[in-house]
Amino acid sequence: MCKAICGVGAGACNGAINVHWSKGSDISDINAKFGAQHTVTGSLGLIFAAYFAKSVNNISPNILWFLYLSLTALHIFANMMCLRLVAFDYFNTERMTSVVESFLDRIRGGEDSDKIFVEEPITISSQEGLFFGLSGRIPIHMGVSFDSLVRSSQMDNDGIQEAIEDVSHQKYTVVLGSNRSISVAVSEDAETADRTKGYFHALILRKLVESDHSIRNGKALKDAVQEVVAKLWPQFVSSASKAQWDLSKTELSNKGYEISIQS
Image (cartoon, rainbow, N blue to C red; front, side, top):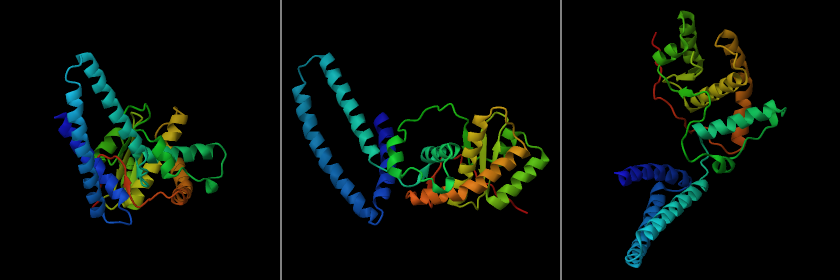
């Protein structure tokens, strides 16, 4: 069962990596080469495994477990080093969080936002975490349902109307919940740039709330964050494009809901 689960995960990851490598080429050509390499390495592995099994036939169980654990650790380490070589040039949740927070920290440090060059994909690739875990940060829930958005922030009728207007005009809305979580609802008509901007908006809101825990949700907070987003978003897009980030594609983690507004 564990091997089957690993096979599904590996297949999904290999698909994304092959698509990334196939830019300017044919995906079928990349898949064919991958299959050929897998056949060669599998054959060599089979030969080595047979020789290894024969060699360790008479050794003690303790030494056998030591060899097994050592080879397993080597296998995991080799895979980690291989993943570090893959520099995806589009944002997922972690990559965008790292780039945006570095961008905001440099502005806070006094740098001119028009002259900031964000980290390139190859730099972020060496920093991106390979394991999932709890960060202890204010959570950002992307692509929530409208019902969840209203309940988490305890909106009144005026707040609901404002959220509907935001989704209609800017294709997303960002709300700070009563439990200090941040929810982002997106329109079904939202394009990639709108979704990316929505997450950018949420990151700025989180940065502001984490720097001052006395901040509470309200119109003043919303207007202040909206003003910052309007100023920094074009500059961030320009800086990210110069760093060779592809903003036409994102893989932001989300709940999968899209808002449809009917008149």
